[in-house]
Image 1 (spheres, one colour):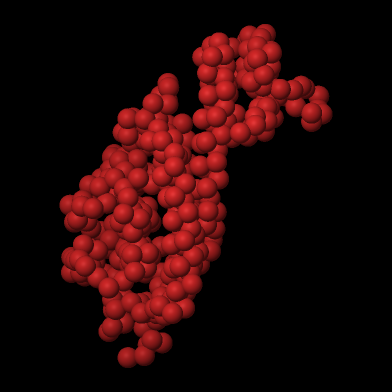
Image 2 (cartoon, helix red, strand yellow; image 1 turned 90 degrees about the vertical axis):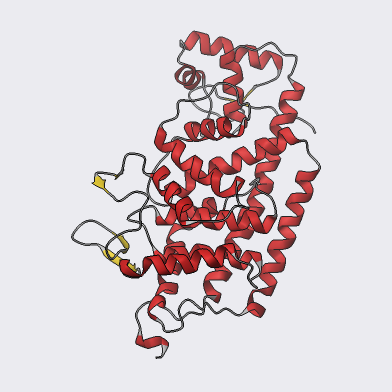
Length: 371
């Protein structure tokens, strides 16, 4: 049977013997490996506390963005608090966390911190149950911790005008298909570790074995295999954050790959480029973590109240827009007069300065601190 005689890759008589042009990927594999080496070299030169902070930023981004890809918005502070609590990282006051946020966090942390453990049917069922603690996806009741029992594919668009991007194998094949997949993940194979991460992500998406949550679990599997490739359970970069930035391209290439032959060179090239961007972005995250540490070293002896500390941390983590006394009053839930006194105190200590940018209201920014 020729590749044009079947609609989806899993219908091929050669399925699941993925093919790819390793020579065409060699340059990308070298580039990603070099970028990973540079990042790990920088991380080796800083203390454990700063590495924990950099990892916290990356994991928070990963949890938030893997959900955003599916159109779900999680509260960033809740995610950060949940991760900090699980990792034992001190970030001061913790934000409230609901069980749904905790479930997504637990899945990602289990995939990465325990990357060396076998991926089993029961482990995947546990991840799925963590994603859907109420047994519902939105308003729909779904089978939780069990393979789907009907045909399933990825669709988009409003009800009545939905577009089918691809269809998954029929439910009666899932036991055998997932068994083969798990044997491959847990076994010693010839693939380059980065290639294996890309294939694991793609293969799970192709099987689409659950009623919902397949994309998030596929990306968690990719993270698990990347952690194995890095030989480190601690994560410092987020592939999901890069996928979310190019969400349409992600779904487009998945659709093309599902409907093509078993040659997945194009997918792997896209995946490696995405990993490379994620590693490059991690350098910016590390820069901000180091800058934040230098700032607090500089102002360690400066008397500040809780509101002022919270404000400065918000600015150091990347404040959206201009800071004014009215915005601080809203953030800190205090009176405008109290907010202005807090800001004036920080300005007098040199921890804040008036922004040169004009406007109807005076705005403030962090000072430039010399390294």
